[in-house]
Length: 230
Image (cartoon, rainbow, N blue to C red):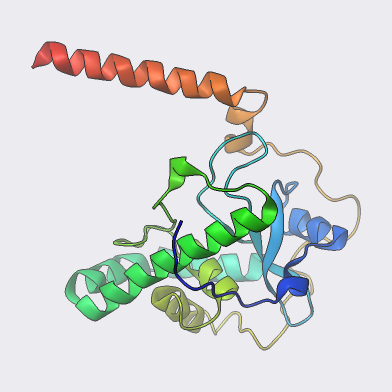
């Protein structure tokens, strides 16, 4: 459990997800949302921008990615930055700029502090399997800009320096002060009701205890093989 201060952009009332929020999230992602316990950030119109996920899913699986960027306009804009090579540039800067690297470590610690608070509020509690593990490559690398932008939006400006930079660089396509929701996702008909994402298909109907036992078996086999080769 970290003792870092909690930084969140929304107050307690603003974080509570309504049925309309969950419907909107499912439409934004084109799949039913799962284990969303809060809304991390909202558009000026009130629609969700970031979904906050429990640190342990209802299936029992640890889930370190707390903040999930959902708004299609923002996700598309961030994808453009990734395609343009921004992550590589940021990683080079982390290697060269000690002050930036130190700020990024603090962002990692802030992420963990928020996740601990969310786990406590949602009833998940501590999840020892992901202790010290944040997301997006923190604290030393940049592996997913969407994670960093989601963190910046949910925590507020001044917490994640690289997430803040990415938000500034997508100003051509999205800014905090305007609504970009109209036409960004399908609003008519029934919201998606079946999740066929790869993660869910591989995890559905699997008892978590069985998965843990299988991982332990494979680990024991690797260790035995390494001992034989020594």
